[in-house]
Image 1 (cartoon, each protein chain N blue to C red):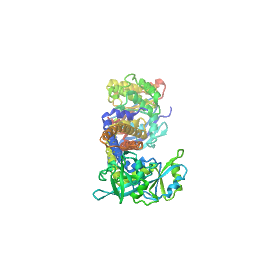
Image 2: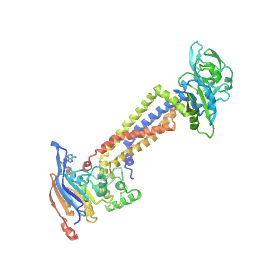
Image 3: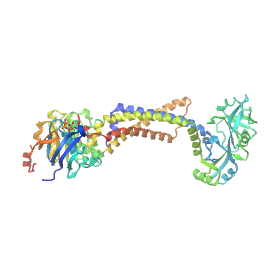
Length: 242
Length: 374
Ligand SMILES: Nc1ncnc2c1ncn2[C@@H]1O[C@H](COP(=O)(O)OP(=O)(O)OP(=O)(O)O)[C@@H](O)[C@H]1O
Ligand SMILES: [Mg+2]
């Protein structure tokens, strides 16, 4: 078994201090591998988004240690984190967060620009990425003229800019109808299963569990249960499950 | 690079227009104020600017043209021996008194030049023959000063510190900044009509020979001649203007109006940039999440400011030109050399960047969780 890509070692996050302190994440330990599609479920306020931000180097843990490809990131500061985010992490949000003044293809191009890919090459790659997520028309539309599903496809292409190994998605289907939502989840699952990425997705939708390899349940800041629905597939593909 | 700054600006069109109005206001106010003022200030160096000398030699530590002090004429001959000096001429400026028809006195500035070479002579003659000043004692006065001097006419005889003088002609555009009328005559006559002792001059005018640099000849003169100061035409012109600018408080008035424009502009631009940043805060958060560093975010905010400054300046200048055209028709001139226009552009840039600072601060303190909220 190869080394895990993302390791959390008794990671906690406390917001505020004193009497107003909120323990959003409580001593979570996880080891996450590439090629897996992992779901995180749990009631509102249980700490899912906070955990995602910790994994995505957007937030520093109050306690515990985080390793990204064997490199400890919990102690790094705001100057060293952006390059790590650029290289390893792609984010997908519930509210899409596309840039409203940019067209679909420009949204993807901008992310490529940030990763040092410019000019024609950026345009070419943006088009490839959009095709990869199933968007081949309406490429020059502004986000306000795209449907929810189209917007999330653009956001997905943007997350894939620069080819990051890890995709973190926070309720990416929250604003979509269930059919469109399922298409997006299928895309995400595919990114894990055919491209070998680690895809970690927060969701409230239990109907997509069949697509996942692992499902984690969070309550009150802790991982309280986990099940590996993807074991069967792994046995078939010869990989070893957790 | 996809220009998020530019696209965001044009996306929020109304806000962009409001910001532009603010910048234009500041640009127009600054340009008109400074332009009119500088035009006004050129009066302080009107003679220096019109006389074709490259170099002015003056008494030591002179404050400006109007406060000229006499020094030995001997320096003229020393100056003529310095290599690169094509010619050097005496030139006199001395305060004196003009006897008014009602018996009162008017302060005047007597200007004495060499009528043979006409160096330092009035440049715009409305009436009369300049050669007449060679004879005893003919003078030229400016049309703008006739009222001050009791409406004398060409041919009239007048009295200046007890000496008789005859008006030989009228000049135009030779108006003194300090308000005392200029009276032009030959150097020799001027000695009699002023309090400058014989054997002294007030200025020495120097023309540099072709093939020599003005700066080089100026340095040489300064080294050779003792007890005097040597200025290039441009230096002496600015020195005279600057003096009045600082002393009269007119400079303060100019500065405060220009500053007011700058301040109002900064506030309007600051507000629009700030409001825009707040509205786009989630976008900045998203940028950060997809790997942008704080420096990248600052760059976008600054780029916005630069675009606003450039477009605001360009359109503001068009507006200012329209205003200046109207003003010119009403007889109000402005003076706006290139470096002043560049300076106003610099101030506009500073204004827009200054207006972005609060936004930069906001973005630095951005909460990353923002991007996950619906
Ligand atoms: N910036 C913050 N300051 C203080 N408390 C916070 C902050 N962000 C989140 N919290 C608190 O931390 C806890 C976990 O929040 P988090 O957003 O991670 O939950 P979640 O599981 O993502 O919820 P949801 O399903 O509603 O998105 C909540 O009690 C929340 O109120
Ligand atoms: Mg959440």
